[in-house]
Length: 345
Image (cartoon, rainbow, N blue to C red; front, side, top):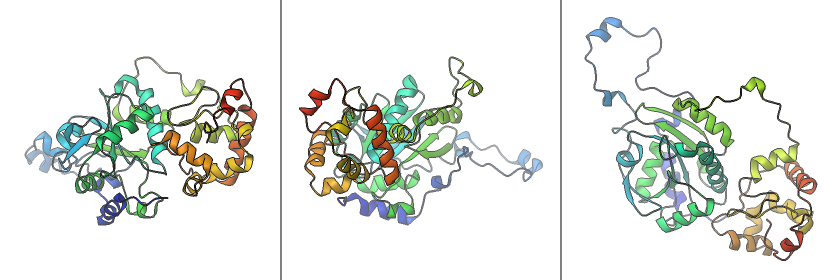
């Protein structure tokens, strides 16, 4: 795995200390919240009422109003333009990431589609590059287009020192990330700036779970009543199908054609030796670094989206391959696929 120049300052930012937002609990934190039974009614009555703005601890006095640049080349201010008065969902990433970033971005694209018209109106998505020297607006724009990112989602870059400060203040990194393979974790920080409420999830959680969690957090009401959980039928997955749905289908299909992020896996077990598939799913980064010809061809074809190391156990890999054998064997597209030796990774 290549060492990125950005890691030194990103690691330094984590070492300085974790921002207060990193300690925000799963439940929304409310500014100036006091434990039950500790208030003094007489003192409260006598105390002057503070202006509304000062009651929000996570407002203009907390967030740095640094200048950032969007993937469209527009200069914006973090607080004034991106946070003030808005509900937001924010992550960190970088386009040359060989770890969680591709999965994170693909997963959030699914989330964006589930939220539909709310994105850009009720909530705004921001992805901040922690490799600003490489990730110019042009590079970020190509990356966003590769994943099919829709309106209401900005990819942001800026000066390294400003990015470092923003990442620290948002709690999007932690000291433990110093030991992570790519120097950061796939956090998704969700916030309602006007109310001073913030929480944190994994950016690679199931997108339906994230959408439901956001609905609860922001108090959104569905226009149409939803089916009760009591009426839901049990979901039964074989182990390989579970891993495929959780890890693979973000970037691949099984018979629906190639995606911009990865090839269709229909017939992959017919075209690739099982031993090669096993090695590649277990450690694609190592095979890419070693110059494996098929892995290299796939990197060249999909460029900004590399197959990441999913940290799957050997048993999980065997389950995925068995699932592909059972459900993705030879189909009507087999002849055309064999004519293109770099379709499948």
